[in-house]
Amino acid sequence: MGLWIPLLAVGFAFILYKFVYVALQRMNFYKKQGLRTEFLPLVGTFIMNVQSSTKKYNDGIYDLKLLAEKEPNLRALVRNFGATPVVLLMDPALKKEFAFNHQHYEVANMFGEFAKIFSAGLTGAQGNVWKKQRKIIGQSFHFEFIRENVPAVVQTTRRLIQDISKRDMKAVKVIAEMEKIAGENVGTIFFSENVTKYTIKGEAISSFLVTMLTRLGKALMTPGYLMFGAKYIEKGIWGSHRELIDDFKQVNTVLAKILDERKNSNTTRKDIAYYLLEAQKSANEEDRLTDFEIIGNYATFIAVRFSYYFHPYDF
Figure 1: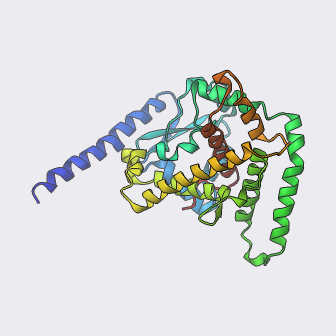
Figure 2: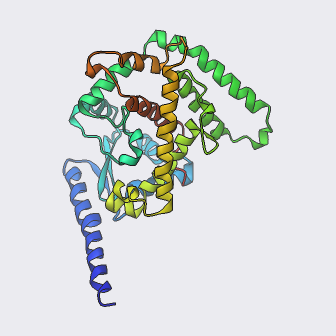
Figure 3: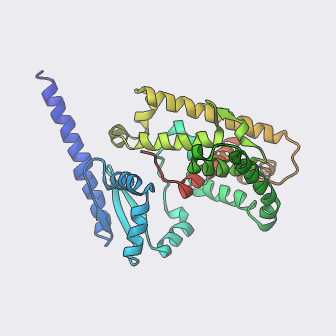
């Protein structure tokens, strides 16, 4: 009993130091620059606002939309995520400056090695790797590419809507069906494949990736992660963490299979994979993406589509 008391005291002191003293010091750095800050010890205002906005409006960033309407001159807002400041850019000019000066910023590795697939694409790359990916992927986004892929998107969407029309409308979950349509269209544009035929635990790969994002988001918003980072999850102390790690391994395996089959397919349509695979033939390493970077960008497309159309986390 005597040993536990000093251990608890040390633990309590560590929590106060990291989540109050250090967190406030970091927040004050931005406050001195004239930015508005919102601070809450331990979990932070970022998590609390996401949870509150999701529960009330079914949209994790709805409070920011309201704030932008109420205070159109607000340039930026800083909220804490545990001991980490999260700078939320509100001013379009600041967002533009951030996007055009990507080299001045370092992308935080929030996910760790076990979920590296979500940081292997454009949103997680940085420096010369980001420039390389942007250059190669950007080559596919031109008018001819869009024109050639529109019929496939229309066909895929019509097929899925027809499938819905054959079911009991009362049992149809609209958001889930929109998610499925968007996810399969991402696969159609990326791989020229009906990716719903690839499943993990009976769930289409695109839907499973969205489920993984939701589970990952919940794991990131726990005291253990806030204190120790991604290593806390990678240790696999809890069964849910071990399952998450195993599921990511399955995702990597299935996506690698999809890419391998795309390499050996006879499709003539110039999807995104076509341009990325053509780039792999270059003698210059700076003009090539690895297989893992390619499937990482597919996962990135799914993640970005998810963040645009749906609330970030399903609490």
